[in-house]
Image 1 (cartoon, rainbow, N blue to C red):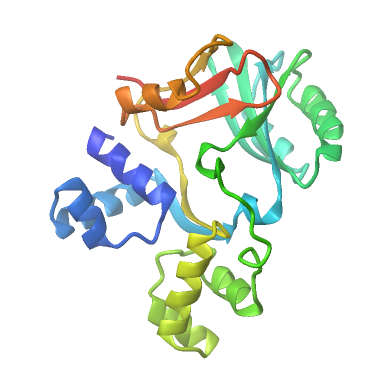
Image 2: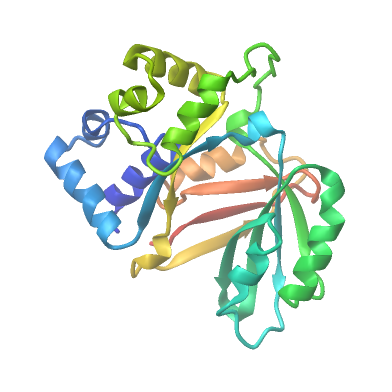
Length: 258
């Protein structure tokens, strides 16, 4: 992937229903070029599918990252074993058998069971457990009325779950409503952070070197330091996690190396 591909993927990760025209204008490319780049990324297995699902904001889920050195001799079948737990969704393997395991919890009461499961299954005797924060949700004040999802909203999300770029008219025909209604409900859900329109992204399918950097901020560091780093090294830093429970506010930066 070149830098244009990385930015294109970032845009689609944030909103997989962005039109080819919008993507082309943002990247200063032609619509034909953007379409070809996306198709190439799909053929390479970097983009697996475009997805729609209820947002973590709506579900009130807790995102956890468990990481540490594993004593396993092979991690070939580890992801399948971890996913059998029903909470784990992501595994990254670093140098020296250092593992990063992402999970979503319905409530904090599931944390101890998850950590014990990961310690045993991944053979990480001393894992670090981070409760992540989501910069995109900072400053969002929950509004119970606006967070309400109606039966039609669930039907729209279900229709888009395996192809979030599906045409509005096609969704409308499936559900027996007007395209205008589908567009209005989608816009409302997106505005209130009730739906995640993203994609299954596998950058490791490319020949690029992917890095996770551990950054520890001093107690008196500028709270905006991570955003500054992301802007300075964009687009090579794809995203970052911050942890609310590990002083002194460490963060993990993820992205392809230069």
